[in-house]
Length: 149
Image (cartoon, rainbow, N blue to C red; front, side):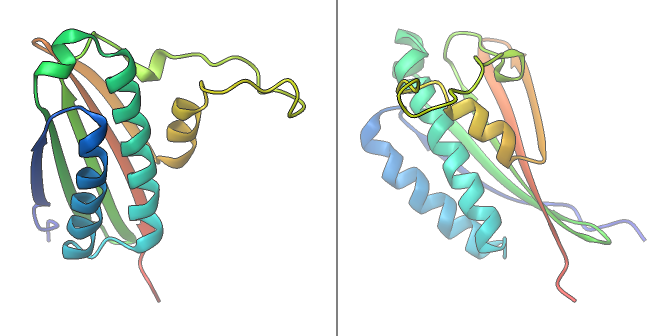
């Protein structure tokens, strides 16, 4: 028997720092509504905040004037679930999958602020895809979890 279609929730927002709290609140409430485990929703929230902070800081003028669309889906499989957060924005074309980070600092004295957000995102997600669709970036971030015994 085929698994049921995924459940989907959406939010449109302006990409500015004042919207970050509303985004997190929406994501947490949506994850609760879709029964996404707290550990998985926490990872998605951190990833969302990092992606939006990068968009706000580096997306350009068009990014700040066009709404961002967030879509959260939950799909169930035989061994667990998958929550997928899709972030669609009008910022400059940027494929975070092609981003290569500098080597990590060996000491705190060598560390400089910034530059670790995408590294965190890549470490937290189980699935990640990017495409350019017209004049929009479309980033999909997926977090998996196992069924409880």
